[in-house]
Length: 232
Ligand SMILES: Nc1ncnc2c1ncn2[C@@H]1O[C@H](COP(=O)(O)OP(=O)(O)OP(=O)(O)O)[C@@H](O)[C@H]1O
Image 1 (cartoon, rainbow, N blue to C red):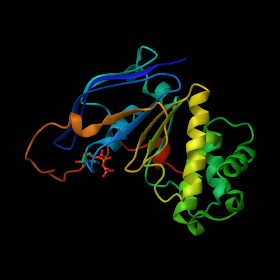
Image 2: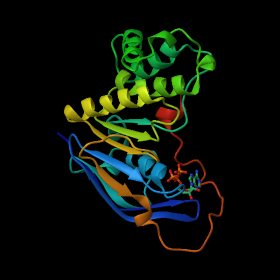
Image 3: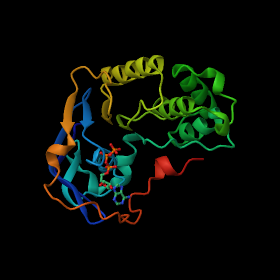
Image 4: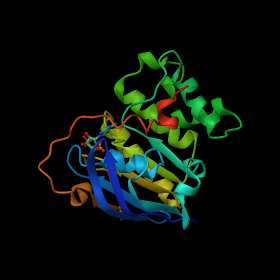
């Protein structure tokens, strides 16, 4: 079973040093809960962990091997669900999900997609076009990717936004199941998500002290996300 670590990570976005000197360690079955105020770097760290954004300094290791040596292999270990829902409006929910299932190598992507929607408690949206889904339904559809295209490491950016209580409880159960089979999860949140035995990482502990405001410059799209952004 792999161990995933980051050591002495520094993240630069635009001209801004977001965090520095950050270490983490995820063991099989582990959970890392990223906390901190808006702009403290939770999403940035998740993207670094997923190989979607290069750290300015520091190293990520998967089972001891440097992620930077083979970023493509690392992306195969990861399922990243960002806070923007990647849903193609003209495709049905099942078709959207089947795209991800096919990318994940499912033999029957449509069957896998329908099964995942059932597990997320929304079988009734399978044939509904993406443009007609509610915010919470879109969120459940995106989280269903975790089941439709399984990967050992789940990276989840504010995964419970727009979910109702029942969906949050169901989702917490999925995280527990994933961890029970040796899976790992890192998630950012501003609310409580039950992750028993999980470790909390406060991003503001690694923010360099400065009075400078963000200069507002985009970092040039270097972190364009293949898996999230290239929806079907
Ligand atoms: N594409 C980008 N280009 C330049 N700077 C960026 C970019 N994306 C984010 N930043 C900056 O990086 C810093 C960290 O942002 P990030 O989104 O990681 O924070 P966060 O902790 O996830 O915030 P929130 O709780 O609001 O989601 C912020 O100062 C933000 O302005």
